[in-house]
Length: 356
Ligand SMILES: Cc1ncc(COP(=O)(O)O)c(C=O)c1O
Image (cartoon, protein in one colour):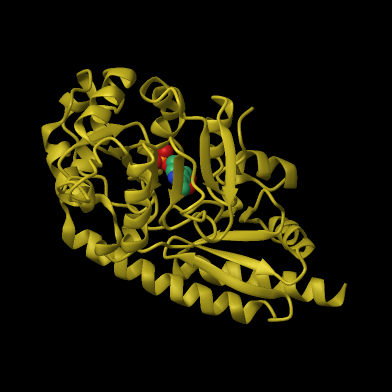
C-alpha cells in the first residue's frame, strides 16, 4: 500500500472543499525558492536521455566524491536496495531504522522481509548491533531535525564494517547544513582504518529537489563505491533521468553563487518563521520546535492538539504535515509574503483552542 506523505494537496483540497489554487501548501520540505530554469536545448527534449558527463562532473564536485549514480530521485534507491542487498549478503536479516523518519525506508525493508529494529532519538547502542545488519540514518532527520556529526557517523561506519553490514546514510536535507557536515567526502578516502576495508559497507543518498526547490524534475544521487554504483546502474537501466532534468541539475550544481544565496535566504526565512510560530502559539500549547532550514516540526504538550490544529489550519486553506503518529506538525519553510498568511492562520487556531 502506498504511504501518505506531504504534497497530497489535491486530496486535501477535495476533503476541505477549497479550490487547490487557494491553498498555502507547506506540507513538504521543498525550498520555496526554486533554481531558475535555464534555456534547455531542443536536443535534450528530442533525444533519448544519455548519461550526461557534465551532470556527473558537476555532481562529483558538489558532493565531493569520486563515484555516483544519477537516479530518478533517491526514492528509486530506497525502493530497490533491500532486494539488491540480499543478493550481496545472504546473511543480512536485520535493519535498524529511526522510529521517526521518512517512512519509505522502513516500508521497503519490511516489504522485502527484513526484521526491523527501531531506534529513537539516539542511534542504537553500538555494542548491540547484530552482525550483517543494515543501519539506516537520516541525517538530518525528517521530520525531527536530529543531526549526527561526521565523527559519530564514523564510529558507526567502522563498526558496521567490522560487522560486515551496510550503513545507509540518507542526506536528503543535508544541503542546508554547513558543507563539512556531509559524510560524502569521507566515502572515497582510503580505508577508514588500516585493517578494515570499508568499500561496499556504506552508501549515501542525496536528493536534488529539496534544496534546489525543483522536486518535480525528480533527480537524486547514490554515492557509493564503484561496485554498488555498477549494480544500481545495471538494475535501473538506461533513461532513469530525463534529458531536460539533467541539463537543469548540471547547471544548478555548478552554480555555487546561487547555492550560497539560497542557503542564506533559507536560514533567514527559517529564523523568522521559527520566531513567528513561537509568537503565534502559546508556550503552554507548543513544547518544542525542531527542524532545519527546509522545515520546522512542532511538538505539543498534549499530543491531540496536533490533529486539532491541523484541521483548524486546513479549514483556512493552510496545509502542513500531520505526523503519522498524529502528534506533531511539520511546516515547510515559506517566503516572507506567505508567512503572514501562515501566522494569521496559526493565531486563529491558537485562539480557537484556547477558547474551546
Ligand atoms: C528523508 C528523505 N529521504 C529521501 C526522500 C526521497 O526524495 P527524492 O526521491 O525526491 O530524492 C525524501 C522525500 O521526501 C525524504 O524526506
